[in-house]
Figure 1 (cartoon, rainbow, N blue to C red):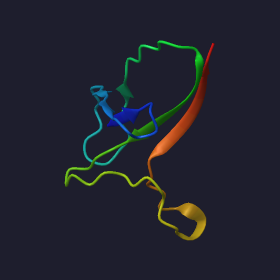
Figure 2 (cartoon, rainbow, N blue to C red):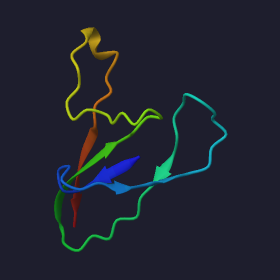
Figure 3 (cartoon, rainbow, N blue to C red):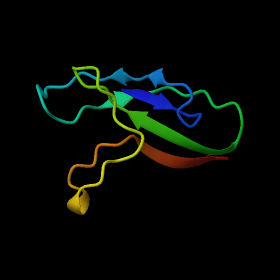
Figure 4 (tube, helix red, strand yellow):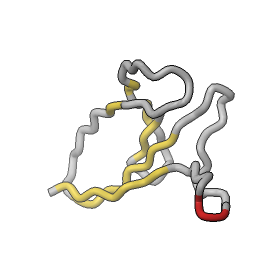
Length: 79
């Protein structure tokens, strides 16, 4: 699991938290971010599978969006 705060130019590893889930399932993770300036930021997150495949930047089209697997992003405002 990786995070980018510069629109994907650089990526930083997160810390995957211990879980009882084995195999396919959600995992919790954490990332400490030292913010130097107030402002609006876009945080991107992506995962890599056991074969080294990284989530794509853009989703592949599929009917109803059931197979969505693209890099996720969220906008935050730091005041």
